[in-house]
Length: 534
Figure 1 (spheres, rainbow, N blue to C red):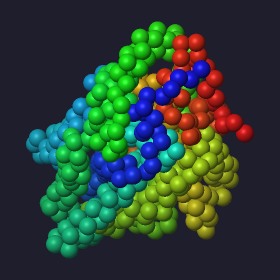
Figure 2: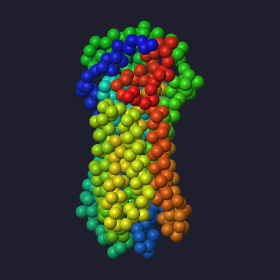
Figure 3: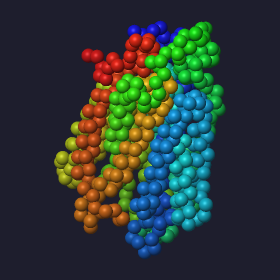
Figure 4: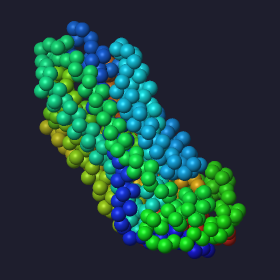
């Protein structure tokens, strides 16, 4: 049987949408804006790094990063993010969301600036420095995932909580777009000031010395939006759910939320102490009691995020082919180094504008209308259908006259990733676990996703190589080919549908209803439904 909710938590649950909600979205969302800028801006400059540091005299093509260096430069931030998600997720439950929130931001600011610096001029020294600071940048970014989601879910009312948390995540789309737009501006300015011939006309002259500043500026500017929100984060009060349910300080929770909600709230210290004394609430993370109550939920959130990110990050495999096919990026030898940055940035910005951003905001609009479960199922279903639609008649799509159809289906796949599991896998772990484990469990789920991202981005880079060793990209062993890789991705998405059945629907429910924290001793959380009631 459910007990009466603490007044301070009930006040948050039933609060009308007001200014402090939007303030929290902006403060948490700017962190995600920065995360996306920092993670995705590296893809804008990897070709430039290849031209500057790995030029081969006499070659008819510009220099490119060797496969192992490319994997390190692109993937080291993922490794850092995974570690940061686990560490800061755990720390957010131990020290409080607010204390740790500022730490992650400072790490991001310092490492964004440092990743544009390098010790020495030799390729090895530059790449080693870049990888070192990109790892620690990822570490800071990783902390932002569980903390932003947890803070927003604990501040939100239960009616529009899904929209608020997914709006924070949707700022990623604007971060990706901002990275592309800034790279367009910088490359245009440098191209106007330092014009150079195409690589085919003058191999050495096509990369002007000033091009070395372009990639550094693009990476370092990621520090600005993070630095701008540091003061606002430091002024945010600790969430009432952490203060009351974890720190057990009802007076402080009531005082903080009275200022935020601009209403009088009773402290109810005695009720907080009663809750903390109950043995049924005293179980630890991964204990038998935790596993019986939340084990399947944690399996659901970790598996679906893992499977989603395999498919989502595998898009890197096909982007260069698609961009080249529709003429957005001409052959590398027909451009100079700075022109190539401009063309890649323009393509990434258009993709973000047409596919990534709309998908996120469709989720924001509908998540509290049709629910998390329905959106996640629909997203995985359409991703499965479209992946098989690309894979089964793959030879048909390789003909030049059919390439536009390939691009449309490819774009729809990632529209339904964003209006689907890419958003819901972020939202749900922040809603269904007890307050004292919420940040940790979100961090574990997010880390599982980053593991999937590494499989998608790098495993499939090798897997998608042609089975014919004479047709593989330089430095790569033979794989199973693009068609078979797409079939594997279709199966991965289908598994996502199955594992979604382990994830409970949280639409319209309070966080304490979902986690069982407002149940009395005799009741348990075993009746949490994993599918919506029809």
